[in-house]
Amino acid sequence: MERFVQTNGIQLHCLDHPGGEPPLVLMPGLTANAHIFDGLLRAGLSPALRVLALDLRGRGLSDKPESGYGMAEHAADVVGLLEALGLERVVLGGHSFGGLLALYMAAHYPERVARLVVLDAAGSFHPQARALIQPSLDRLGTVHPSWEAYLASIKRLPFYAGWWDPTIESAYRADVETRADGTLRPRSRPEAIGEALDRLLAEDWPGHLAAVRQPMLLVNAPGAYGPPGTPPVLPREQALETVAAVADGRYVEVPGNHMTMLFGEGAQRTVAAILDFVRP
Image (cartoon, rainbow, N blue to C red):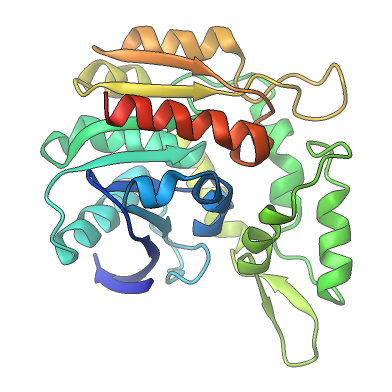
């Protein structure tokens, strides 16, 4: 079910997938949208759990204000959505940027967060982090002549390296809008995503992690984020540092890299870890 909720002065879009308790709220990565979790859902996350997958501000079908892309604004959006849906306390999770937002919310809104599911995100960053995600940022603001041309450009991204799962295509379809002349343009503005990245890097992550008291699961996919020899987005050592920095952390490694972990075998292993953690 698609939902549009007024919160914190904007309209937020989410996909509400039916399932069991407790409800799990999932927040996507820096440039991604709610459909990035379709592979986890296909692997059985719903109907095992009720899953609400969000489009954060500036992404997907949510409103795109000119500014206000810090952690505090994103968190206030999500709290307002929970209030609108009558959800007082949830399992909160996210991938990449969304995982960091989940950690931020656990530290600042502990009454809202029962448990944390962090997918390939940590409170310290690879020195090449900007370079590793640059291919994803480069596609913003570009115009493509057709869906076929856009999809072909996506398949050439280095972190897929010949891998492809058709389930991921729904996320890329939701990522673009079709213009009157038939061309396609990404929905997110480079300026908004750039602000979100800069403000994320400026946060006091050691302080946030020290404040997290909820049980946390960190799922890590340390495969190469590109051709063989390319470093992962989140090396195992850095993931384990974040697990050690919170009061009650658990680490699970799954196959694939930062993107492919959400589909196929990686998704199956990720879902199994989530369900084991949420329903011990």
